[in-house]
Image (tube, rainbow, N blue to C red; front, side):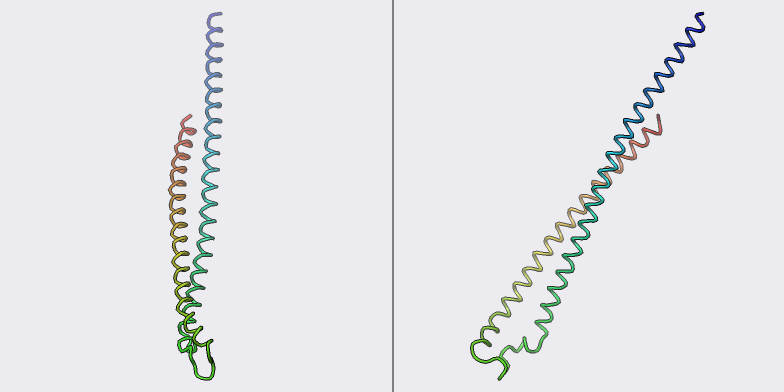
Amino acid sequence: MDDSKEKAREQARKAAEEAEKNRRRQELQMKAEKVRGKISKANNLVTSFHSKKSEFDQAISQIEQKKNSALSSQIVSQVRVPKVFEGVIAEKQASQLPKGIKAMDENIKKVRKVVEGIDDQIRELNTYQDTQQDILTNIMAQIASI
């Protein structure tokens, strides 16, 4: 009789251990899913930032292209062309060109500063993803050891 009670206790203990392992495994799997969600969100943000950075790079390229086009145009470099621009308009055009070029240069600088900020955010998100990946690896190792 004592032997059957001992076997029953042993079976109960094993069942309790197995139940605890399952509970712990489920807990760790839920943590792993949360970490995967964080990694996925960070990845989506990185993708979005890369897209916006590309748009800004295109804007810079377009501004520079228009600026270079204006500077290389023969008629722009010689605003006061005889019998083409007459009177006050030639003087006004001549005074406005440097201001426009300066405004373009300032806008390019501003956009480049935004792009630098985007690059900083991408780097931070990549670091965050690496940290979360390390956490996930640790959790998966814990699950495997159960």
